[in-house]
Image 1 (cartoon, rainbow, N blue to C red):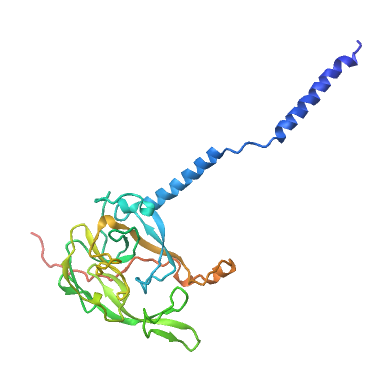
Image 2 (cartoon, rainbow, N blue to C red):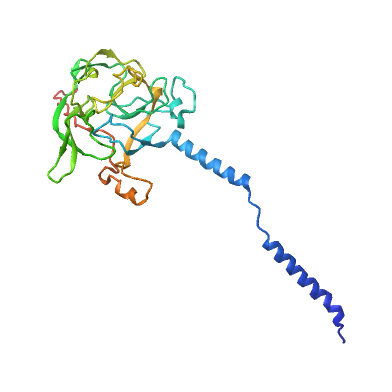
Length: 308
């Protein structure tokens, strides 16, 4: 049986041509699907916003109003769900203000919360001192709650290292900057331990006489709380009716969450040089809880009564 070479050659040429065509197709760059990428990015951003709105969000301490418990440069986690959700829960306060809450609950004495001042979209951070229906007054810096002075026990001064975020300037803390034999400077703050009716106990700083030390008695309205900063001499809180204060008790729908713990803290020395970032960490402040300690309440005396 004879074979015709000319009859075989077209098959070889067709095969080679097919390989070249496949090679050219493989070498073509794949098209970039911008629509799919943008959709994925939008879904990711929505997921982050939803988490920050309904579950928790990070928070940065910009002022000294909560010294000695919170310092400028502390980064916190704030949970959104403990008191329910309202207009203030949405990230960036994008919702219009409205009254009422979903699954609302009342804070407890001593909770550190995130109130929003009336007419402003700025987040503050303060401690709950009085609850709905409480009567509260201040005399010489001491809280009078429902006619009884809130105990304030003298504690040893708290020493906070002086750094860029805690400069201990003379205007804010006059005469409180001290230098140790090692040469290190500290802000030595007169400190008291305040204890609220539920046993919540925490440290406060009160080192000077100023107008907010005295306040006539008021009654906290329903669905409101009275909040104050732990640094009683430098806090625009419920005592403060100025343009920067909270102007009295805060409506619960203006409470954006509860501070839970510190994640990390920076002393303000970091620059654009990444090598400076590690040296700016305050390692002793990371993972501190922000829930107040509770003083055990004395047990009620046992009854000798026997039921019949």
